[in-house]
Length: 92
Image 1 (spheres, one colour):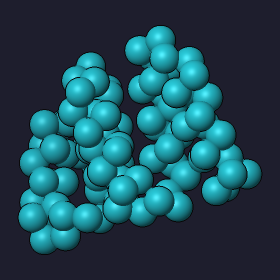
Image 2: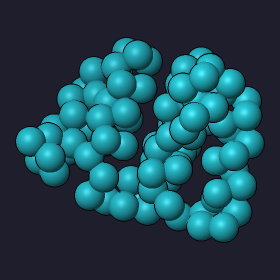
Image 3: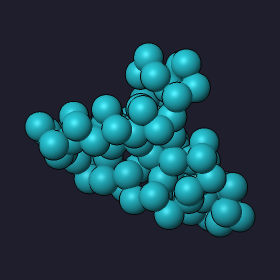
Image 4: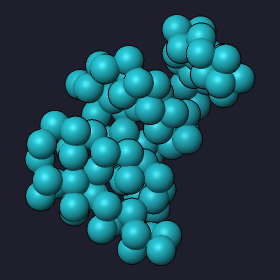
């Protein structure tokens, strides 16, 4: 998280991948990688990690919100709304 805040996204990715080597289904780490890849414009990777985050923890509202952002940015408004709805149902 510190590397991300400092703008060193590549170092953040490396650290998060090390964390996933220990716990490959830790939703927070998966979601954070999704956010970083979104920042880098790597939408396919961002989507993959956000989906893995909600699979690891189906009650993780922030990951659904981040999926909504991805869908919105890609112009899939129907999927964006569905993701935002799911996020709000979990954490109004």
